[in-house]
Length: 219
Length: 219
Image (cartoon, rainbow over all chains, first blue to last red; front, side, top):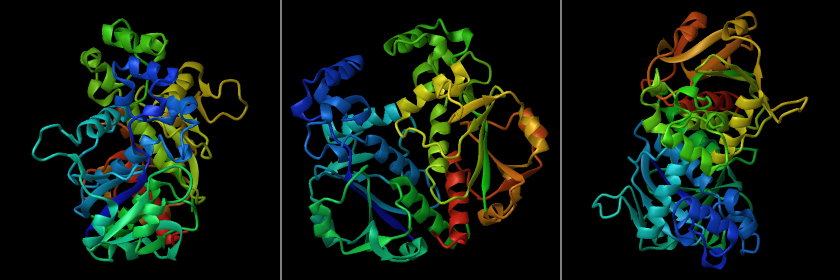
């Protein structure tokens, strides 16, 4: 029983050029001795700067990605298959499923900045913990069927998702508001709903992991 | 079915006087325009300053408390009973179970600083989200039986914890290393273990919540 996971439309990107010269962006970058465009877009810092960006309500929430990765990757029971992050701007990031992401948010941000700037972390390591792949989301279709967790999906119990088989890649949105992008809609083979409630990313992951663990007798 | 939760020996405190004049502490406080002793102790910022503090390996991990609160309080299915934080220095903090803690770590830190400095958040609100109570851990014994989650505890399935009854308060350690304090050992009515693995705080909470949800048919 292995769960392959991909975070979808993930709200993780560097500060875009359009707002790199905004005073709030410059001020926060300077505090950390970084160039503005080398820092992660974060709505808790860049709210005023972001409000003119297209699609801004889905953007600038690296905390969602951090929490989702912590939730999945902390699991020690060997149920983790392959792990990817699809970002809101279409990047596909490979994540080593043995990676232990930093618990501290600010350390995670530092790591994510390195990743997006240099293409992988650690830089120049033959076995990176995270690496931007030179592929698109559609390329994963040759390897997997893609099941997207969505309120409007087919109602299933989370334990059913544990037993789909390892040719399935489970996609969970990692953005704060709004709908999946057209890119996601173009690749989804099936939509699944595991709750009557609108769940947050880490809750979806918690429920799926736990349902699998329960099936295994709670190791 | 309601779960009463208390985080135990939680690694959450303001910078103690002994290290308030350490250069790293002053530097970080100044960046945020705060007095050093008005900032939260955080090992990711204060590592070098902390190394001479007693019991330092259990201290300075507010991220563990943040993650645990997010995990529990995000749940919308009405299974949350009363919520408390017991801190490593013996404070008991009431947490409104309807509170939605800030997802962003740095915002949570700001809130925790206010709480520890002023005794409650929001300050001067008749219905605080969090409030330091004028009681000790032993005082909770008059209201609850205290069940502590511990590797060495009685082996149970997490669903059994859902059905203990509302006179039980489930305690989960919220510190990085080491054993429970003598204070905890003095109040525990029972120890429970829900895994063969050493779990992190948010994982314990995820498993218990999910087991309860599963019993309710995954609402």
